[in-house]
Image 1 (cartoon, one colour):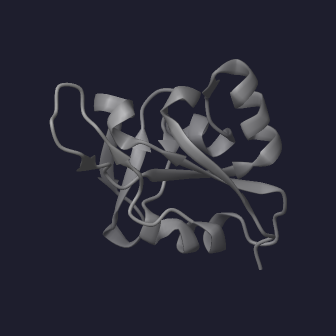
Image 2 (spheres, one colour; image 1 turned 45 degrees about the vertical axis):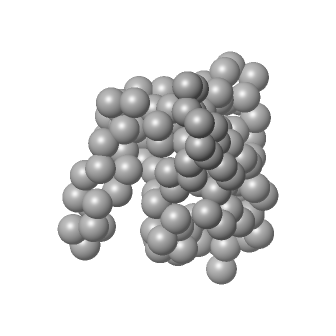
Length: 122
């Protein structure tokens, strides 16, 4: 997976700064293929019901997989540059009071820094 992230040279900067840790979306491969064709991911039924796209921090991925995707196949892990999401990204309390990233608006494909196939979840 993504360890430490790639380095990025900021416009006008003279040094290389590490990219902030990505946030992640887990979804079926078919949903992501539709998003790529459209240029943006608008969410799954749970996202649409809640009014935001549910994302996870790196340390929340395993819990999200276990709670919401147990037994599912053909999933992808979409890594997203949080800075590309601007003010639409908010960290809010969720499972057990932990702060989770929530995206209020569509997820633009241009904000994605990587997509990884996931094995079937137990």
